[in-house]
Image (cartoon, rainbow, N blue to C red; front, side):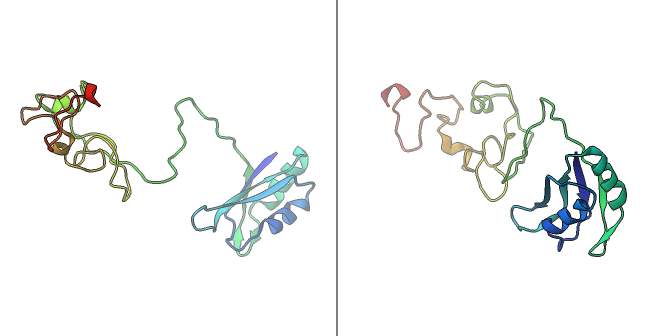
Length: 173
């Protein structure tokens, strides 16, 4: 049985957690969850005990017991069931969007035929300055005018166009 152990002191070691539960029976594993960035305990962990009766006894006896001045929270671990819509969280960066804008006229060409408001999209988050979509133009944070949308009338040019006078079409690449 998997057992959740919360409200752990940051001083508590995995070996001490294991020893506390071994008083009630065999322990398969004892793990304190560590923050990847700070390398410090997150204040909770998991203990696995193969015998369910011993595990239930350990839960009832250790819940509320003080270790290093903190009362333990001990209960049966609840397995989180993933639904098809669940997505893992990104490990870094972040996201943001800036809505608004218009879908009419020349802005529509920036969306490549999709009927989406101009100005929306992923900003890249953090200090990356990247992303796509809206904000200050997206695609690395450059102004929209740098992406060669053709002339000022907003016509989308087949090869993307350029302010450098490079008028080659995509077929010439």
